[in-house]
Length: 138
Image (cartoon, rainbow, N blue to C red; front, top):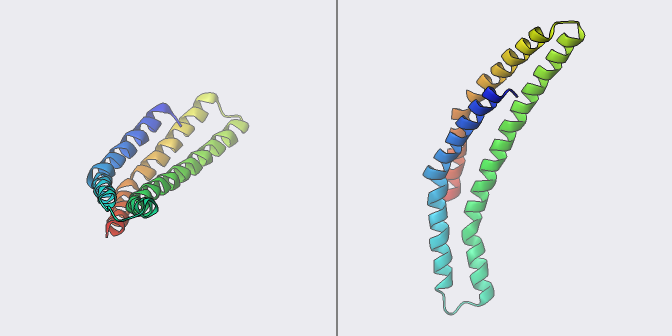
């Protein structure tokens, strides 16, 4: 992917991840640490019970991180498939005898279109992730 297009995607995805971390994940981390501290304040529990309690406290955060990772991987896979299609179109055009500048132009337009299409999916993906994170917190 051309550097400019890649930078656009990285910036928007980074902004989304920071928003999720700030609005959802950070609160979950706080609850996890408080819950874990409460587990350690149980003087009658065995070491094994305390560890099980702490593991239970960590579960929602682990699920949340897995959810975000999974969504980002799906997004990346879709964007990669789109850019691979652009590569195929460019190769076909090159094989038909087109000049290098025409192939580059096609590739840039095609990848730009992929990026635009996928960046337009970010708001709905963010909403879906936040809804799923909210359901994990309950």
